[in-house]
Amino acid sequence: MTLTSEHQVILFKPQGRIDLHGGMALSEKMAGVLPQQDQLWVIDFAEVDFMDSSGLVSLVQGLKAARQSGCRLLLCNVQAPVRLILELTQLDSVFEIVNTYEDIPESSAKAVCC
Image (cartoon, rainbow, N blue to C red; front, side, top):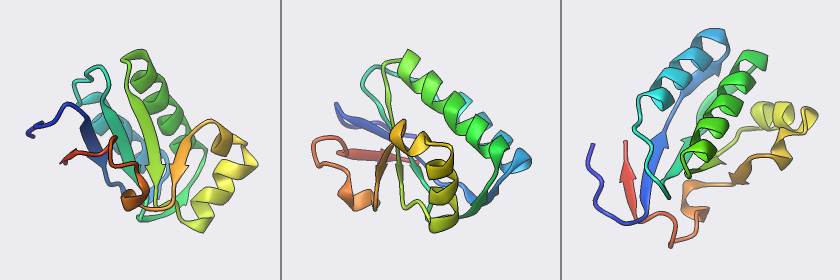
């Protein structure tokens, strides 16, 4: 993983279901990132078609970890079933959500690290 910009972006791309198993996998990936002040963590939901309460726990833990480290966490490409869960739990007002990765302000997304 190379970081080449002052505005560092860490991109997470989960796939399939974010249930107990998928949520744990996402949590492990986020825990494996060494947070640095002013990083932008982006979770791209383009390939996620389902999320349950276990997945929500992973997202909230990730948001907490990011904020404690001075990072920002943003969700993009959130599909309708996942967006519905976020809306029903009112977490859509807690998370920053953009339609697509390209909608992230240019000043925030200068380098992508996968």
